Image 1 (cartoon, rainbow, N blue to C red):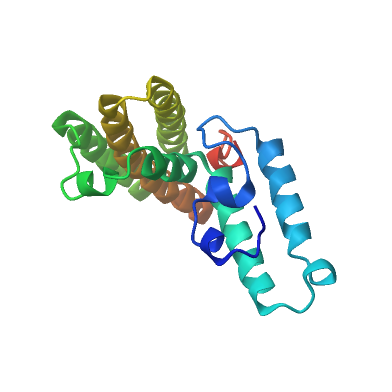
Image 2: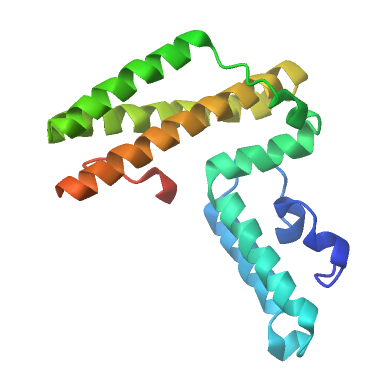
Length: 189
């Protein structure tokens, strides 16, 4: 499929980069596909075509989406369950999850106010573990491939977003307090 087809610029990131539409994608495969597509749109090959800039921007966005597991899961869910956008009108988040996050949020706020680096480290580790569990749940849901599993992935993604926002808060506070996180940055995974 040629990159200069205008409909592809509006397509999904899997199609744009020419990689299989699946959750488990190798980061090197994404990188190779990205480099091949950007090379096709390079001015030395595509000339001074105004559309080439749009292609490069679309390819960059596709790589950004596919490099991030949460964004990749969202894109894949849109592809395999097009009606998933209807589910978002009332997120079916379990009340126990919301209560847990609210309680943890209070603990995090207390740790920030007390400048308690150990507590912040503990909650950051909790968030990283919760993120890893979300990745595993999404992987299992996509492998199952049925509507019930897709709905569960939607719930997992909604929970994942809460956890990511909490992580951002913790990391921001740690930065302001001069505390170096002891856990890996999940965006690098």
